[in-house]
Image (tube, rainbow, N blue to C red; front, side, top):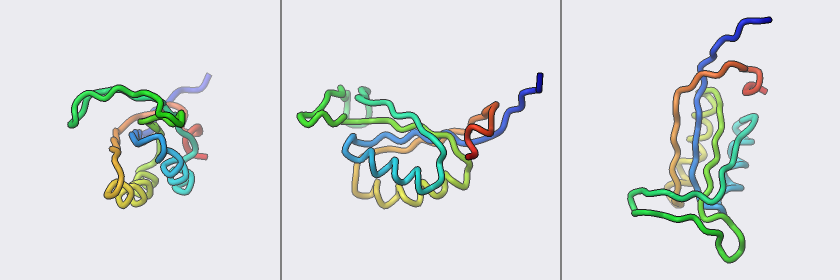
Length: 108
């Protein structure tokens, strides 16, 4: 059995409207991010009060969260694409320091 080691990476969580999801996913692909998780139909409380997610008339999620793990260099590329986007659209980006045990899953 081989020993497990922890490797430092970044976790990026992006909350955006459902209609902007494809833009964010395309940006992650272009930055070379190897994978992500999407959480649909978010609810919560923020600076504008409580928000209860409900599908819109076109079945588009009002808010989604896209979670990914990446190197710091890829975070810089994602931020370069998100900055002009967030100047015109609603959304938020969270970045956290994390450690992963299977680095090969995130460096494809």
